[in-house]
Length: 230
Image 1 (cartoon, helix red, strand yellow):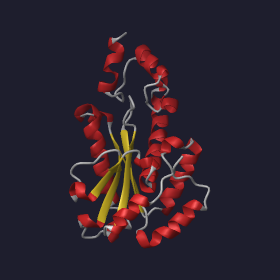
Image 2 (cartoon, helix red, strand yellow):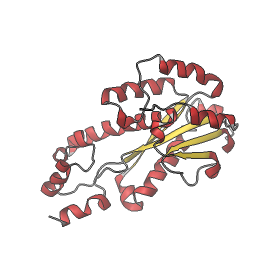
Image 3 (cartoon, rainbow, N blue to C red):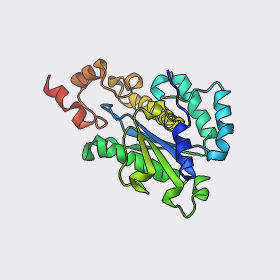
């Protein structure tokens, strides 16, 4: 099984981009709860050799968050936050998802997390007087419209969280954030098992909707057929 590396980041650095951000989302297919996007910027090209050494010689695994166990993700998230140049996590509410649809909500989450990461130290100082050419974006799956620099300053990578360390890191911090959020929300709505299913459409979750109905945290388009069928 291949592991993510810095091959895509290196291509962007060779093209003259100073910084490379990886961005990914978590929760796109869930029936309940917000969608969460994460962004991670690691050190620029001259410093990456040392970072690579740290990763290879630590017990931390940087990989597609779905291929890691919960404890591995939590350990990796702490390591990423300590070793990344900058990171950010952004959530888009269920009300926004219900209003504009999951596709637009996902893109909005990615744009916002990339916008916010540029305002955090030390990125805010390093990108003072921000120029679009300074930052290249690696996106898991699909291009994101309306980013600075347009489509020429980003690359969409299918299964990017299994190929790019920056995207994998973004998927990890987003996954850890959203899982903890759904565990907290599960205490408020215990009937639906969100602590275990994280809002995804398991059989238990479907049966719970039939028994107890939908909540304000359910996505209308995702669950509208369940009650109708019963």
